[in-house]
Image (cartoon, rainbow, N blue to C red; front, side, top):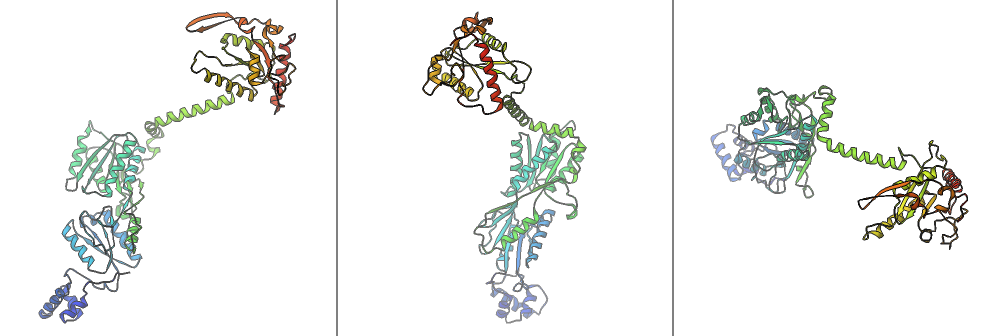
Length: 561
C-alpha cells in the first residue's frame, strides 16, 4: 500500500540530464563514472530538485516504512528488541523497514524526516527525545513512549500501573522501606508515570519512599554515593528498590554487592522493561515486563491505517511482573511461612481488626437470634405500665410464676421472663417518643407470641389501645368489646400469688437509694392473659399455649374477675 509519489524520481533526473537511468544511479550512489556523465548527472539531480541523501532503489516496486530513533537507544537491548518486533510485524504484512539512527542529533533527525517525506514510505514509527520534532501531516506517524506534535498517537506500556505493581511486589516480598531510582531525560514522557505509580502506591500503603532522580548526562556513580549515604552500621536505610529500567537495576545490584549488601536477602531490586539474557534466557533481574511484541504490532497497525480519526492520542498496553536474576527463588518455603505471615500482618493488621469486629458482630447477632448461651424461658409475662418495676421486684414475680410452672422446652429448668413495656419517662420533651417505642415493642411481642400473661396497671386503658385481653375463659373478645371488665383479676385477689413472699426491693432514684416491699408495688397490678384470634400455626406454638393455660389455671384458682 505504498503511497503515490509526487517527488522527483531518478527517471526525472535522467531525463533532465540527458543520460541513462543507470548513470544517475551510479552518480547518486558514488559509483565511478566518466567526468562528463558525473557532471550531467549532478546537474540533472539538482535541476530536478532531488536531494543527494535520497536513496530510492526499487522504491516504486516495494512498500517501505521508516522508523526514526537514536543510535544510543537502538544500541540498548530494549530498543533493539523493539526494532526487532517492529521489523517482524512489517515483514509479516509485506513491508520493509528502514532503520534510521540519529545519535541524539536533532539536525540529523530533521534530515531523516525530510528524506522520508520525499520518498514512498508509508509512515514513521518514532522513538525520539526531540520535543520539537515536526512530522509532515501527510506522513502517517506513531511514537513510542513520548508525545509528538500534531495528531501522532503515542503507544506505551501501562507505566503508571507498572510502578504500582513494583511497589506491591516489593511489599509482598517483605520490604517495608522503599526507594525509587531513575536516570533519564527531563522531557515529559509516558516513562515518567513509572515513578508516579510507584509513589502513589507507597502512599496508599503508608510506606516511606526515598527518591533519587538523575538527568541523562549524570554519572551512575552518583547512585552509588546515594546508597552509601543511606548506609549505616552495614545496613541500608531501605530494603526494596525500584529502578526505572532493567539496565539501571543491574547496575544498582552491582553497586549493592560492592557495598557488602546481599541481594535479595538484604535488599530487593526490581527493574522495568523485561530484558532477558541472550534475548530468550532468564531475566536479568526481577522486572516489570513491557509487552514489546504487542506494542510493535500496535504501532504497525496504527501507522498503516488510512485514518486515525477515531484513534486516541495514547494507547497503554498492560504490563506484568516476573521474577528474575537475583530475586529468583525467593519463595515462601525458603523464607518461612511465619515470615510471610508476619509481613502480611504488618501491613494488613487494621483490615484484620475490622474483619474480626465484623465477624464478632455477625456472630453476636446470630447468637442473639438463635439464643445461643441463653436459658430460653418457658413462660413470658408482659408488664405494661407507666413506671418500671424495680429489678428485684421483677425477679420476685418471675420466681412466683416459676414455682408453679413446668419445663415446657425440655432444658431441665423452669424459666420465666418478665418483659417491661413502660410508657412514662422523666424526659418530658421525648415522652411521646418513648411511649411510641414501648407500644412498638409490645406489638412485636404480641406478633411473635412471646408473652402469654399480662400484668397491667391500667387494664381499661390497655384494652382500649390494643384489645389484646382475652375473656376469663380464654376466648378472644368480640369485635366491639373494648372493655377490661371480667378479663383481669388483681394480684392481691389471686390466693396462689398473694400468698407468695415477694420480698423487698432496692433501687436508685435521682441518686438516692430507695427500698420497699415488692408486694406493695404488685398488689395494685392486674393479671390477665392475651387473646388469640387465630389457631396456633405449628406444634411448638400449640404446646406453649397449652402449657401457659395450665399455669393460668393454677395461678388464678380461687380468684374471681
